[in-house]
Structure formats: C-alpha cells, structure tokens
Image (tube, rainbow, N blue to C red; front, top):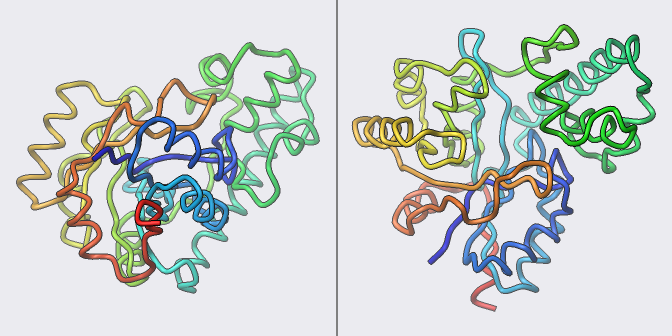
Length: 284
C-alpha cells in the first residue's frame, strides 16, 4: 500500500487544483493521499469528490503555520473537525496576516522592480491562502525570475531585505486545538535545516506532552542523518513516524510518492481521529 500524507493544491500554494492532485495521486499509484493545504480546508470538498471518482482514499488535513520560541514550525493536522470554532479563529487570523504580509513584501519589491499587488492577486485562486510562492509565481509571469526557486533564492528568503513576518500560533496551542478538534497533529519536516532555523528536541518533547501524535521523518528536505534522528526521537517519545512528498505540483521538485508512510503508521493516526472521517474511494 502506497500512502502519501502531505500534499498541497491551489487552495494554498500548490499549482494544481484539489481534484487534479487526486487524479495525479491515483496515476502515481497511491492508495491513500492527504490534502494538507496551509491554514485552510477549502480544498476538501473537491478533493473528496475526485478521490471517489479515482478510487483513492483521501485523508482530509491541513498544514498549520506555527511558531516555537521564534522559530517557524509547521504542524500537519489530520481528520480534525473543520468547523471547530476555536481553531477556525486562529486560522482566520493566520490567513489574514499572511495576506497583509504578502502585500508588505510586494510593496517592498515594487520599489525595485515592476511588480504590483494586482500581479500577485491574479495568480491566487479564489479563497486560497496567500503565501510567498504566489509572489514568486507573479515574478515569473512578469519575467523577473525564471522560476519559484530563483525567486526565493534571490528575493523571498527569510533573510532578504524584502522579507516580512506574519502571525503564527504558538505550536503548543496549535497541538492542543487540533486534539480538541478531534484531529491528529504531526510535526512536519522538523529538521529541514536548509529551510532555516529548526526547533530543538526539547520543543518536540514539549509538543509530545501537549498531545503531538507523530513526526514526519522521511521528507525530501531531510538529510539521511536528519531522517534517522527523527525516527529515533519518534521512537523515544512514542510518536507515529511518517513519510510524505510535500507535493506542490510544479511549485517544487517534490513528486508524489517520493516519500511514503507505512500502513501501520496510518492505522495509528486513524485510530486517534474523531473529528472527521477519511474518504474511502478504494472501497467504491
């Protein structure tokens, strides 16, 4: 059984619509796929319908932007109640902050190059969570850079003079809210040092005490050493160990199923979820 528990669509910063992600997942031979757009669940409905059509199981999920002692942390939430109000309030705050942050970045870039907010708005799908990848796409469309990678390397990285921060929930609060919403929290790519600063093992221990269920060990941005460390830490803390592609369509080199999760790990995730049910397209 092939299981990929981390993908993105045009509901956030992926380049393919939710239904297209499901079609591609089926074509890649996946049996189970999770849709985990940033800070939103708006892609769930279209993905669910497509999963049934393509005979693939869908794990509805989300990737929440968090912080721990000033370090960015991404928390995957699987099968939570999408209408749980305390979590919804935090997500709304985060999306609004992402949008205002994107406008600040664009204003700074516009002082040095031909880029406008309308350029960025034109590449964002209706209702999608706005992020730096959308700015990168607008820069590509304008001919300023060749691709997203160049945009981040030259202009959009965290140390850039064009950079601006956005609101992110404290990761311990996020873990607790996901559990209260009946969801299953898993820390995403915790040791991806090439992305920037990473949290210490102590933070992950605190997250485990707050209700963290799993750790994403196998990820394209983890070195072999980082993956081993994540597996060992997961075993020490009794966490589910997962592997995922973090697919973004053409937005990243990550390909569906290039990292996968073992069936027994998925079973542990399913056993702890009470917020919403998976979509079982394979049984159809």
